[in-house]
Length: 219
Figure (cartoon, helix red, strand yellow):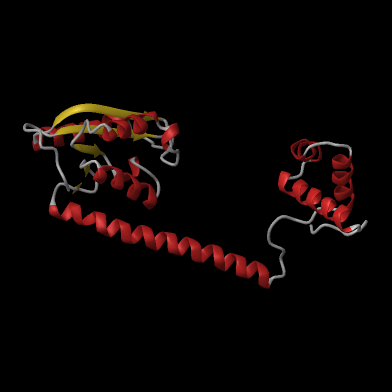
């Protein structure tokens, strides 16, 4: 991994998070071992970012501490980011891979206390390649589960996609359009999608152009 050419101690940012479900866990409990690691490894702590009472399932926008951390990473304010555990950063492998990608692109290392991981070491750097493989595997398995579920639904005779609109509602859409209402207004009034209203309007225009009077639009 690329490192800062700036001489002197490495600049470290600490990130800690606890959720309401973390019994007995506090940000102070997480900070202490990180501060001890910084002293032992000769880092200079330049920032501490905290998210308290926030689930790891929340995205960056709902985690102000993580958002501030990543903004600092983008500005290259740190040489290494330290967290108490991988579960403090996110709840899924893709989350971790995405974060590691952001850090790697900026030449910033990651230290995880519980997992004894430091990407500034050769064994830690090897994790990047491993994580990308596992992330691809997870995406493939998710796709396979989706396609398998669709196949089972088809085999059981279940209809996939939106249910068909009733003839009564189709006629109400036609009437609203014939009265001069727009697509969005009609969709809002009748609580149907704008795409369906547009489809009915195209069908009505086709009837006028061909001189037909009564074909039903596809549902």
